[in-house]
Image (cartoon, rainbow, N blue to C red; front, top):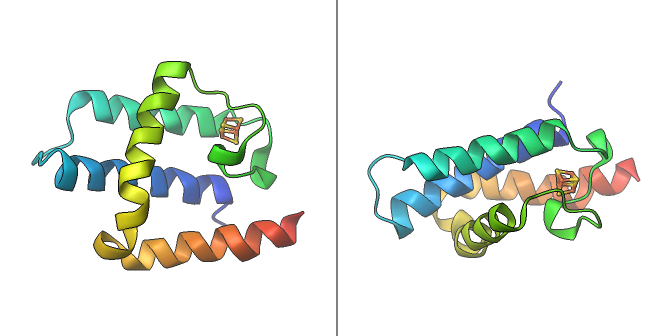
Length: 106
Ligand code: SF4
């Protein structure tokens, strides 16, 4: 069964891809952005909140190194509002999960 963490990993990877393709105009994901996806994935694997985790942006701990936090925030700020354009199904799925599934876990 997919967890919120699995879903978050997919969403972060998708948002980085959207950022690279549409903002950086890169045909392939540059190495430093692959590194960012890998870093975020590893943070999620080690998340102390487990399946009941909050959204990383609302996390009281925030386990990212400052530079990685700055980079992922930049990607989220650009890709977040554009998800509905470039990946509408994923955007609705993420929104549904954030609003309903996680609320019911509390
Ligand atoms: S930022 Fe917070 S919620 Fe996100 S992975 Fe780190 S500890 Fe977990």
